[in-house]
Image (cartoon, helix red, strand yellow):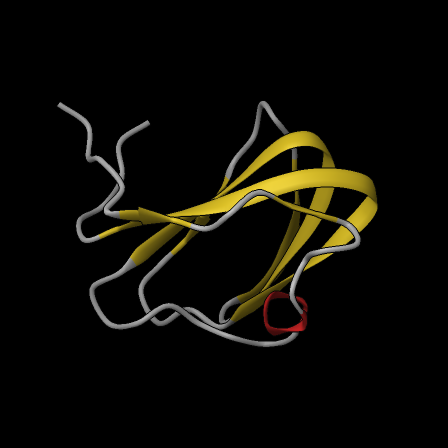
Length: 90
């Protein structure tokens, strides 16, 4: 059985995506985040360890507890973040 998110953000687009998500931030201890793109593409940059990936509707982005990161829209996008208190399943 896969984990169920305990909270989700509203759906944001390229205009409503908060500055807090566009700048370095991290989840709390014991909290995993899954960045889900509904439409478009989003660049997810991890700062520790350094890497980046493009998140799409077919490829969500996993955030580990306390992992510093930020996101950047790549054109028009609709996205949200689901939060889990255990490692999310597939």
